[in-house]
Amino acid sequence: MKSKLIFLFLIFVFLLSSGLGCKQGNIAAYNELSEPITLRYWRVFDGDDSFSDIINAYRQMHPNVNIEYRKLRYEEYEQALLEAWAEDRGPDVFSIHNTWVGKYKEKITPLPESIKLPYVTEADKRTGKMIKADYNQVRTLTPMDVKTKFADTVYQDVVREDKILGLPLSVDSLALFFNRALFDNAQITKQPQTWLEVKEMVKKLTIYDETGNITQSGIAMGSADNINRASDILALLMMQNGTQMVDEVRSRATFQESSPYISDKSFKPGVDALRFYTDFASPTKDVYNWSESMPEATEAFISGKVAMMLGYAYQLPLIKTQGARLNIGVAEAPHININGTDALGSKINMASYWIETVSKNTKYQNYAWDFLVFATSEGQAEKYLNKTKKPTALRSLVDKQINDYEIAPFARQVLTAKSWYRGRDPLSAEDIFRTMIKNVVSGKSEIEQAINFAAGSINQTF
Image (tube, rainbow, N blue to C red; front, top):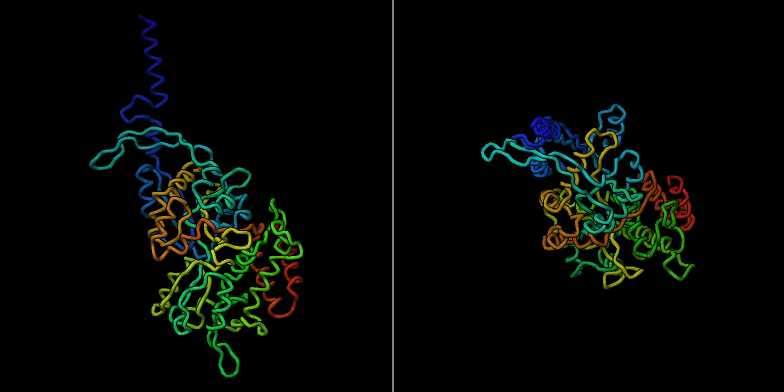
């Protein structure tokens, strides 16, 4: 009898110590959910209304988690991050551009293979108040999951040394914006599908005054400082032309070299693409229609001074607001071949997007990553995309967005969008590309000299 009582007593002690057998379920899980924590989340561009539904849905499962969302201006963002981390008040969760992964790699804690967190298992139907709780350990995502669920460019950008360093909500890409009224005036009945068609249309759309000055441009291409994403447009042309931008191990730039994929080793596709781009700003070329003296490309498009420009989905709301009277069309970016493919037989578009990630300094790694895995899942990401009108990063949502007139051209490019590694100082790489363009247009450097110097400069940041 005595041994039986001892046995029952040990079971009782075990149940208490493990948190089981209580009216609250697992008492440890219940207590943890009763203690509030705050995740600080820093982003750019999107207001907190874009995330309110996702945050509220997450808090229903984790009522102890408060998510403090802060939107910062792009111009101040990186400096604010560095200052906050230096003073130990930085965000737990933050956004970085897909080209910044190499730069911020040491500031990031990778996604763990599994996460153990407390969950509400029973709540009062009337008040929503927690009644019972328990722990649940769940598998997160593997690199293969990222490759399967997201667009290919995501895997290339966020997976390093078999670790996942971030997850995106959207993947944007360069598309062609065009002014339908200017097309109609020039008797152009459809948007261009190839770069050859772009060249022919530019000749029809460009108008000069009696002194030879450009009064209406066909397309905003050829210069550097007055085209917001000149470096991306040039990189798109290079990749479409068969250029390998960097070597396989991301140790050096190779965009100035012949392509390992093209048998003719005398042909350098990057050089050819740079020539094609700068021809649009060269007065001696028949496609001359743009110069550094023109207004900034987006402003020129809004004011009806340029018929076409390459831009991202995030630029469209501003253009529609400021150019409310414009009859704007949006089409997929042009390609080399009429069937929509490029030099190596595949279709290539230029990706630009933001990645959500977790700071290595956070005290709440599991909660932070659990929130991001939740936020970037199909059901939650769709809420964000519907509010922001941005193209998806998830393969499973592409078909839905293709049927959305406003976002369809960008959605059709998600699966073929690519990026390239720009070293540990991606903003310097952009400056180097702009300098390369200016040196060619001004005649300061020959094309091969300019591109070789640019590659050498970028290599210093690798």
